[in-house]
Length: 177
View 1 (cartoon, rainbow, N blue to C red):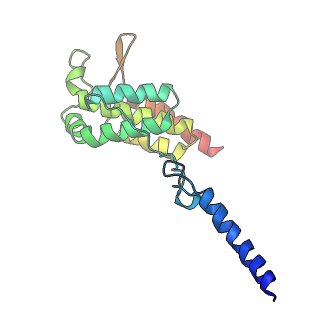
View 2 (tube, helix red, strand yellow):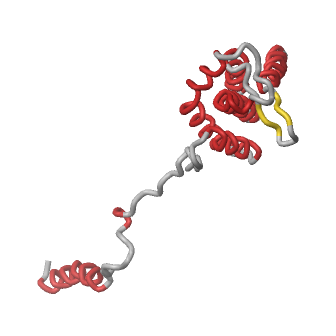
View 3 (cartoon, rainbow, N blue to C red):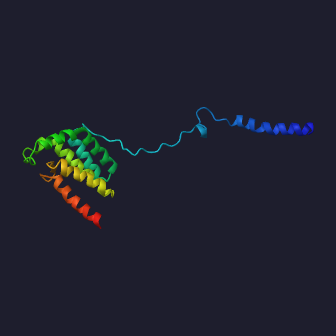
């Protein structure tokens, strides 16, 4: 290789380096591609507002999430209510031989709210086509929290366990098809 050819080749090799120095990103510019953090995947668990963490607030929020079709929120609210109040609900259930009269129904707040939450989650699971999981919630309600009552905004108490029995019959019938 001649001296001129060697000089030309060396010059060509130096051009990219000089070019890179001139176009070097400034400190405040975006990071290099290899330093860019991968996009974070959205979490499947929503951030929930449990209010004052009372069973009535959590149950109300579970109803609202069900009405809005926000099933992951239903799962979160119901799980929190059960986690916090199920032991008290079962204790209240055991103290009764029948559902409390309407005048005393509010005294069994944990029983009422945990039972209602099982019903709500059953409805949510059913809406998602998870019939076996819905049946599990309905069965828990019927077998362990049968004296639970839920206040209807129209002015009376209704029994989620009675509604759960009807749901169980329908789901069991559907499974025979």
